[in-house]
Amino acid sequence: MSLPPYTDFGFLPIGEHVGTFNETYNKYVRGDQIREPIWKDFLILKDKVINTHCFKTIEILGSFLSVIEDPHDIDVVLEFKSVEKPDKSVQFVFDQKKIKTRYKTDLLDSTLLSSR
Image (cartoon, rainbow, N blue to C red; front, side, top):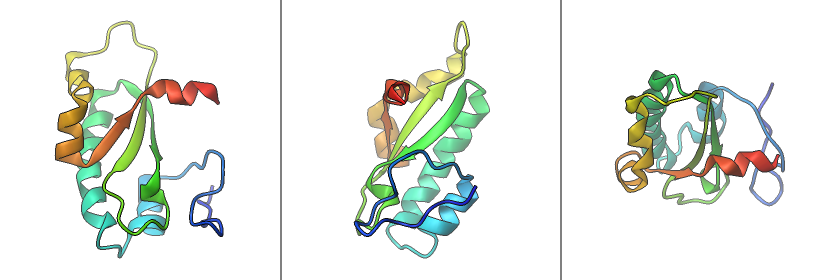
């Protein structure tokens, strides 16, 4: 599935848009001096999250994926897989202040996804 262009207002169209991290980078990040370092830090976090094998989706939201010139971070929602007891390797995602400082990522509550 192809990622959409921005609307006339500079945001993604309303709805869910599925794409790979490479597609997202190529379409919305590549060549942007503000977004590139934020994306680089996010990718480190993304790899840590994927290596836990406890999440089924990583959703990127917010001003990072818009024409806003100076986003300060990436808003992300992590949706847990159905697991009875998450592995201890997952605990790092609950330190939101550290995640925000180190990875320039604002982790949002996964219940935001449940309204869809």
